[in-house]
Image 1 (tube, rainbow, N blue to C red):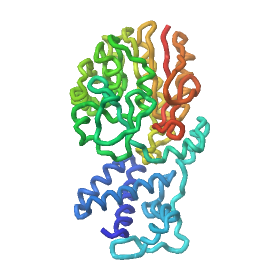
Image 2 (cartoon, rainbow, N blue to C red):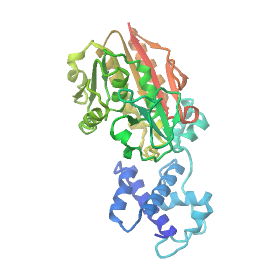
Image 3 (tube, helix red, strand yellow):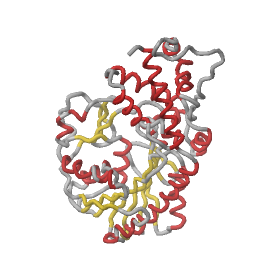
Amino acid sequence: MTPSARVQAAIEILDKVIEGARRQGAPADRIISEWARANRYAGSKDRRAIRELVYRAIRECGEVPRTGRAAMLRLAGDDAEIAALFDGSQYGPPAIGEGEEPAHGSIAPEWLEDRLIASGTSEEDAEALLGRAPLDLRVNRLKADIDTLDLPEDAERLPVPNALRLPSGTQVEQWQAYRDGLIEVQDAGSQTACLALAAQPGEIIIDLCAGAGGKTLSLAAAMDNRGTLIAADTDRGRLSRLGPRAERAGVSIVREVLMNPGQELKSLADWHGKADAVLIDAPCSGTGTWRRNPESRWRLTPAELGRLADLQQRLLAVAADLVKPGGRITYITCSLLDEEGKDQIERFLAVRPQFTAQALDLPLGRPHGPGVRLTPHHDGTDGFFIASLSAA
């Protein structure tokens, strides 16, 4: 493909991404994959270049653009090489017309920017949310030692125990160490959140929103594969991916529980008042993960944010009924919005006086209300809010 044809392909893909965002349809990754399958003449270099153009345009446009062309014109305004590719060639985009307006550039939709500012998010933190995320690894201490692990490429040691960092795009899934379960892909912020729970061997721990089990496996390693670890979720598809991952990691203490939405306590009746600790990796807006999924800020609405906040409040109530006296709850959101973090915990503490917020001594993050906040700019991780609550 010619460079101009790549730009035109990116414009056509962006049109579909924009439509998907407006109608809550297919996400950008799937649309790009479908385009590649339908256009097999495009080589691997073409596909990489087009994908890069699409995501550059998404990052540049805070609001949902009018069209894919407007989004690409946003890039062209700052990049003369891209502007020159609007050349009207056979497979390229038509020349830029006089007075043709590019899409508006910003961090996020105005209402969402206002919420971030109100939550104490600095300009540097907000801008860093749209950078490129590195690839972080967790060395599985059940099978390997970070000091003696031999990997095909040099990795940066991070201040988080067992955490390594590699450049974005490193194909670790092809490494023997990955296939043998010696390493897992996990953001250092997510690893830090697991540290906050202070999981101990022999405990009963419930991962209330386990998903595909990334944090579950981290907790199992901290427990030295001893105790009872309940991986609970309402998503059958995501939970089904945990079994093979646990087998590869050598984890044998996990019990999976598929919960019915709204009936989580009933699904976990056997553990009422018995858990030493509950981890809530709560469903949230994902504002802290825009480096990986910048399109998500086009899809979030005030109504959806309100729904998520209600769900988080309900999950905190479920966790409160699961922990035993003296037990603890670790609450996590990959969000920088206070209504999903600081405000949520303050509201919980106001109605549950038997719980107190505990100070956290973590290798990353800064105090924020009754918890700790991590940001890409300050910590080099995804954005997180983490709080630890202790039951009387």
